[in-house]
Length: 151
Image 1 (spheres, rainbow, N blue to C red):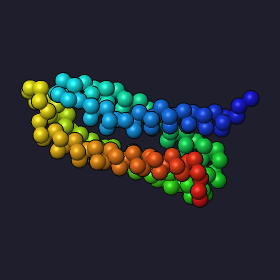
Image 2 (cartoon, rainbow, N blue to C red):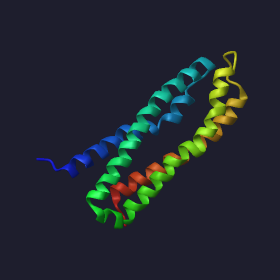
Image 3 (cartoon, one colour):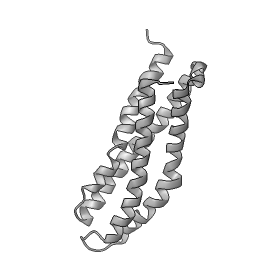
Image 4 (cartoon, rainbow, N blue to C red):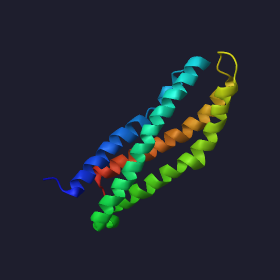
């Protein structure tokens, strides 16, 4: 019979796949738009994927902390504490950095008339994507720490 801890590990890993996997392609999805109609559709798809990412992220945090409370020695492991700190930092990047930079992009998508993508979009999205790529690097570091447990 599976222990509760093993069930948490299973949910944790499954959440990482479902939550982080789509998160790595959020930027790629919107880069495929060649005109405003395609770009708006790409952002619609991105929004739906982001919901999955948020659910996965919440489950990751809850299961990760639950495993720590069930096995308190994890809080003494450098890889666990570092991963937790990086994950919390990545979660904070969303509302503190990404959200303010995505609002002008969303406003532009709603207000722009015509099919040609305006130059302003490219400038705004470049900044947004830079921070999204930083967040992806953080998640790659977290995944590496979880797999390798180097310290």
